[in-house]
Length: 310
Ligand code: R5P
Image (cartoon, rainbow, N blue to C red; front, side):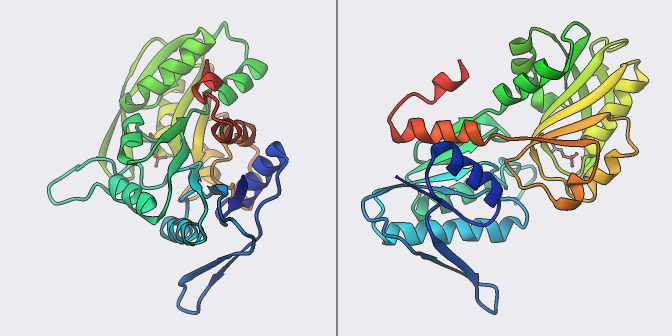
């Protein structure tokens, strides 16, 4: 078995390698002068079970190209089985036609990954569960919920707690976490008049006097969480924190949380946090490396992955 990392999130790949007590396979990744990606695998991988770790995070097209070219290099080097480990699957939000003459890019990118050589995919908290079916190879979609649940249990008193979905699309995810914790659920009714802009319409549930925890798959510009936190405070919530699996954090999202109603934002390390974001006292990072490492170990040993979430 071999573990290999592209460049999007080296610290996460190193932590996974530590968990598995395996070295990362030596490779060279360079750019030609016109920014073309060049990759050479510096070790023999013939007949190996190889796991390539790469989030297709910012800059999404470059990180995706690195992954595709790495898969191609491994396929041509006669790896026996190649698993694309994609902790954050960028392009997932383009999972349907939102208008006439628009693409379904989440499907196109899945096709590219399979065509490049992935025999399996291992990912986490896909924006919508059904995207799993976009990959025409076995795909495991892990959930970060056990890691988030453990952190919440360690830090909060469950009695006054309320889990809140920041939009209707996230209700299944938020309800699953509320059930694991045995606490109530509220829902924010969010409207998106245009891409990148969100407006809170209503709050479903009585949040007065409750400590609220917003749960989402992605925080991008942070507009959704800022708007939801303010609306919850306006309705009498005593405190508002947020947990997200993927901290995309575009447009100074983290810096803008400083002046928001949000007490804390906790993100998993599926995307490598930026140094300037880590300076914020409102941001805390949880690692999912042991969860991903354990899933890789189970896939390699042909053991159940779903047992991890029982
Ligand atoms: C959308 O449905 C996602 O689950 C997130 O709520 C969204 O991507 C967050 O975007 P932003 O932080 O830009 O509001």
